[in-house]
Length: 314
Image (cartoon, rainbow, N blue to C red; front, side, top):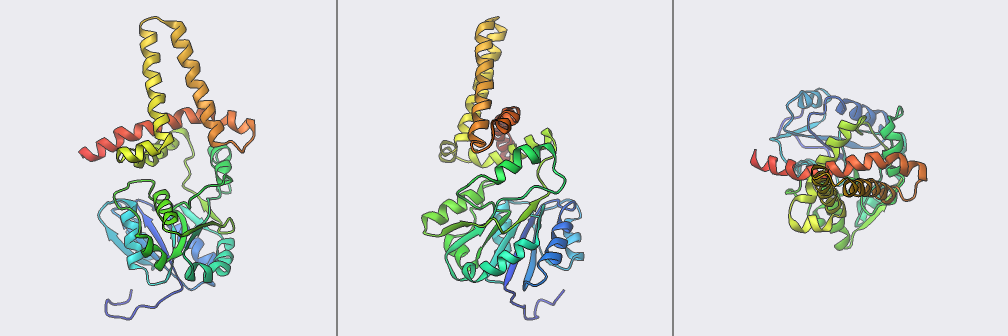
């Protein structure tokens, strides 16, 4: 690696990768960058966010720019990555993602616009080549949905735009990408979804336990303050969903079986309605298939609250 006093080359693009315990995926991402983005002038910046595995050693061996910090929010890691990056155009890519040749071609076409205009671009993830059941029925339909923000794992903008918006909110544990885009739009930035910026997400959960853990983690941001809770329809629905379970349990304990049946059917109806809301542009088969997942989705989103409280205590 160059010495601290050596002049630093200024590439066109800095790929900023926040990473926490990512030995299973980081090497694949770096390899995909070098295989598919070979004709782009770029640097790779890995921000190791307090990993307890060999992630920093893997990054060092790969010859990328490495920054290490004690475990903190992913927002802090992203912001530090921008501060370290030498390029004007920043591509935030999560460590469990792979970039495609299509991403490189789209970036070459979009580059002047990203560099010179006040905008944020990127795209939803593609599912892996050998998809799991969850990949096919949950994440693939979600990737086709029209959304109003760019996911932080495939988000591209200029450093000038990033600084004008004010960076990511370092208080937030999750949901920082959504909040960033909301704030950007209020400040006049364009949000442009470009499906040609194709990125494959290897980190999608492959089973129900992984799915629940993921949703618990993603829901933490919705409980970080009353204002964020009241703005989150999912968080409110999750709390109501659990309260109905308590009523159901009370009815069973008091042997009010008709009441218990009513609230049991209500839980099923809510799960179906949430599936219909999430996958409203999909077929009825997809909605029915995902109704059981939506049950665990709501339970997991409620469990984000005790998870947040336990994190604060520890």
